[in-house]
Length: 552
Image (cartoon, rainbow, N blue to C red; front, side):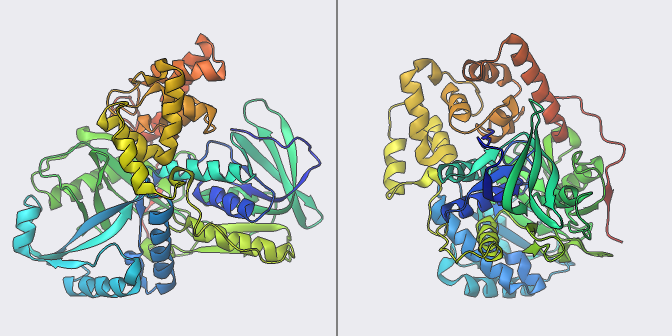
């Protein structure tokens, strides 16, 4: 939803480019500390890199391999805080790590790493890792390949099934704290006063209206697009060197595990996952150098074959083929640029805040960042912003601030009470709780005011019409894609919500004033938006030039 300043001459403290997980977290943190903030994004909140992740809240185990203890400590802390501040969205997620003969990382090394991790996590862990014998593997994971198996370990991490909802709740909280968010608004340039950057020039994608946003400090938090924001505006070396990560989504397959399997790929020794996810499985991810169009990132046939082959190898009875792929998800990790890299896994997953002064004062660029550590990144950016603006330090409150869906002193009591409600089916109540947390009360309140909103709009998920209403009335959705893919999550089902699209569009029309022509246009635009997922139900040609390049 666009919230335009009422006065073009109004000066804000921070103008943030990018409404992904990091940009919204910055807005929330800065607004909570009393700064006036406006966020600009050319699309919807969380519609870029955030929605293409593995949906894991990593404790940082993988970073021990590079001795990045700072990032491991930060990841452990932030995972712990998310369990407390967003218990409806973040859940415990056990992983089995099998050890096979010939792996580049021998079992003894992984066990040592787990022991170090457990020591670092101390009281912030979700349970100690433990060794699993071949006999126990055969009992609990009978379909896992035992050829060359040398044992395994069970590790506890965390998952956020709906990363999109993290963004929605950051948006809601930032807006509650006074931040303004302008979606579907393109940054057309930086405003400069000599060398100093003093704000942004923008254009509303729907109306064509152009506007200037004057700001004491501009923060470039556009993820993989940070170089595009700077291009033609200021002189800068290349900052983003993001790699491409792709996943495929499949239905349960013969021998599919109940827990996540974290294993080493035979083809390139990359650690990859078989991830149980909302009744289905996500297989991924790849890690390829990418030099293509950032707006045309799709999983290639080679990536799909790689993920299926590795899964079939580890689960010999799976028999997965490309025809089993419901859809794929592909995005670019916002990593720092590293020339002549030979192993993408060695590129830092941490973040830095670059001050372009003295060449271009008034401008910060955020390089890197992860789903897990978005809050810590935002704290660092706000600390830096206050210092650059010459303001006194102000206490950060987001370490203890709950997300809107967890804004209750008695989460477990609320959960039990809501699940025992006679309204809706038990499965529907569980779904509302998992997606909205305590805000599920708002969904039911709308349905009670208009019983027609109790209508089920998607048979697979059990989503009701009131969720569409909440998406539009409360959560800033302005397109059918916003509603389907990033609010109700109906679009992440097996058919990507295509069977429910017309019903959802009809409900949204009541609140957004769409006529029949606009409804048809929204459904067509939704189908177009889905093409980057290469869904099985749509004829989507493979791209001739993928932009992928393996490190040399």
